Amino acid sequence: MPLGTAAFIIATAFLTAALSGIFGMAGGLVLMGALALVLPVSAAFVTHGILQLVANGWRAILHRRHVRWPILLYFCLASAVAAGVVACLAFTPSPTLVFLLLGLVPMLVWLPRDWVQLDAARRPHALASGFLVTSLNLTAGVAGPLLDIFFVRTQLTRHEIVATKAATQVFSHLAKILVYGAPLFWTHKTAALPPLWMFGLAIPLSMAGTALGGWVLDRMTDVNFKRWTAWIVTAIGIFYLTKALGDWL
Image (cartoon, rainbow, N blue to C red; front, side, top):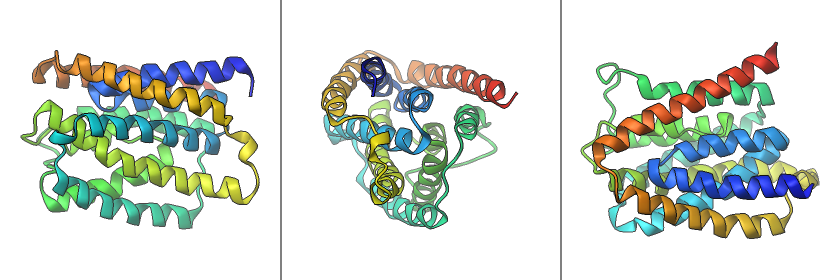
């Protein structure tokens, strides 16, 4: 891998971890798109899964006292089922489809509250979120805005939202690593993945970015947190839709 590409991935990992540390999902959108620009789709999915697994895991640890454990349990059960289904289908999206889905997923934040009454604190909804979010994560690479639909209508605080979402995403990204990483090892195509030294630098920087994001989160209000999240992911989505349209034309 060229040194410039590795440096780009490392810097993006830090910045997007900080962004996710603040808003809980926007960083994953940016990172997935950046990786899809410089890596093959399967390698981008695995790399994204590893970096986001660390970022989300560290964020969950930092805010562990705010994690809602019953939600996490039901999410994980359904997530495992979704991973099994997608693995059996053996589906790998094209780069254009990835950018199209990355552009469409953020638009979910604008669904009217009256249209979908979902609450991750309820057992059936937590199970549904685990299956749907993991399925989308395994086809688009990210699913933060969909996960957000299950949380924005809850009575959870901003810290509980960020902590619990981070914990659920640990399992969602683990599924992505297994589903897309296993075929690369079986077919001896691991050369498409970034070198280990890049992960050695990117992972601690992701943890540092997560800590920085948590520092900013502590200084926000719940109202500003939810308002800024919607507008930021929408801007990201518009950029990806433009990219997908350009690739298609």
